[in-house]
Picture (cartoon, rainbow, N blue to C red):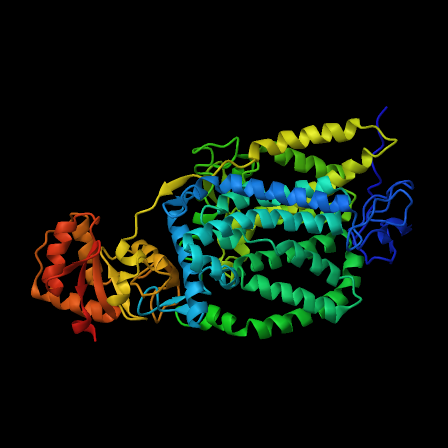
Length: 640
């Protein structure tokens, strides 16, 4: 005999204490149960009310009215998520100063520099949104890059004590654990009754390929621990009641997320818009009833955010070194349709070649769920198709997945000329700066919530007095689908050692505050690593960043065009030219150190073609001298 499916009549989120009509026009008594939960099927009459300490058989409540066993469960969930995060980043912890974690060392180097600069800005009271300490003398607009002002501020004591490489590794680890627990917390308090279902939802949101792949150097993308709270406050806002208060609470969360990651904030806002569209499709009348309180609360939120973020927004869109758009063809960073059924590089079922050509690179593998997950999702949507929340989540997941394909559809790994929906918006402001594959981050969040809702409904089917066969089969299906996409530890690679001249602080005797130390060869990443090791104590030429093409063309580009002397030294280091230099090159070299506002030029002993470079530098700037483990040329007489 088959167990009857739970009641999946059309229900929607409602304020606690108020009843809402279901899709058939009758009052829905379950809509008023729970502490503002997204309503679902009714619990049986003998089911204890969650956290009800008034029942004779209720467990003694801990502080805040929650049973102690809940606190223990919450602590266990947090430990599991933390263990999972440490598993992913484990290889990096073995030697955080000597190893780079993941497959994108340049991205990690830049984000370490961001944390180092944040500590410098705090201790020297400098501008956290713009600096000339990278890409001297023009500088870098930090808002048009990754931002991360708030994490940098919070981690400043850690950075000062242990260095930027340790702070980076701590940040990338806590992002995974914190994002998982944040989703668990919101899901278990406001969306589902089953703690196990909430755990699965949080696990998917944090440890699916999306966030694991972005742990290859993108902490501003994996810092999603505020996203669940923002989404929940948007839902709460739509219920009316305390419009001003709810608008201020949402505004505070948005402001904090603004200074964590503006890109994730934009994707969150876009996900909310998709959610509204989905709700409008599923329940048009209810959606219109909720419009007034929602718009009123959003107006309050907008005022607060506008005041708090006015200056950084100006810096982002009109400040020095701001850019317009992302360099390159947007489809170069897009996913393929087939990527959704393949496995990521860092998944249990994946391999170094499993994702090749199906996505842009090892960092942007935001889909890669595999066939089992896709089939499971389709089955869940069909099973719970009458529930409003499931319809809305299906719309959000589908639209965001299609957007991540880019401006044209794909067949296999080949891109066609047939326009895809993203082509309609890719030229709009902000959309032109988004890395297209990251729309699938919204898909991952939607699927995580969907799994939590489905798990909760399965748990209700398996309550006392009902057959346990369905939940057992569901658990097996879930395990079979999720096991292949569980993460493996990220790879590591060795760092190029930074000279003791920098790490020991010996540079301070040769470079004044705010002046430039020029590493040789003049390479963007060498500049970044040296500067990070010195906690941004000196300025460096070039760097690793996004900026404008020129002072008159704000189109986005990577880095900056090297100065002639930088090109000359790079060519010598690669063996592409000899050591002979003429009067014009000497004059240009001296003009370039004036341009960089340099106090010293440093050649590390371990540099490739060290002897040739030393001959050239002696010819350009006069005899150098050895200081610690570098050869140093004091160019202050030429630049002051």
